[in-house]
Amino acid sequence: MATARAWGQLDRDALWQILDEVALGDLTLQSMIFEPGELALHVATGKKATKRIPARIDLRGYLRPAPTD
Image (cartoon, rainbow, N blue to C red; front, side):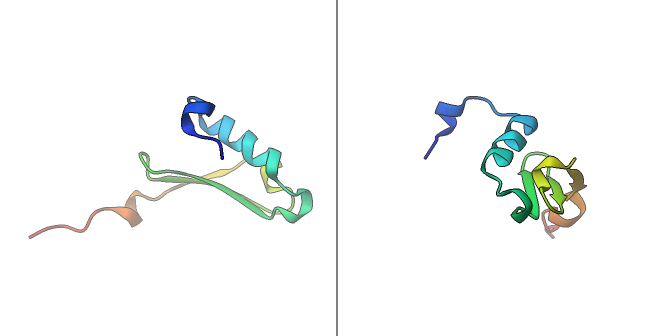
């Protein structure tokens, strides 16, 4: 199992490349990266999903903390 220390700093493009390296061709129907700090999800769907351009989904409206009284 690779550690963050072994990989170093990874940006979204590097993560997408790693996903592509382990993809199973036509069998990989969806791939995604979740950015917790940005509350964003980058998703691609369809055959060879990692070969597609991911769409960014802003999750801030869905994952906001509940208001406190």
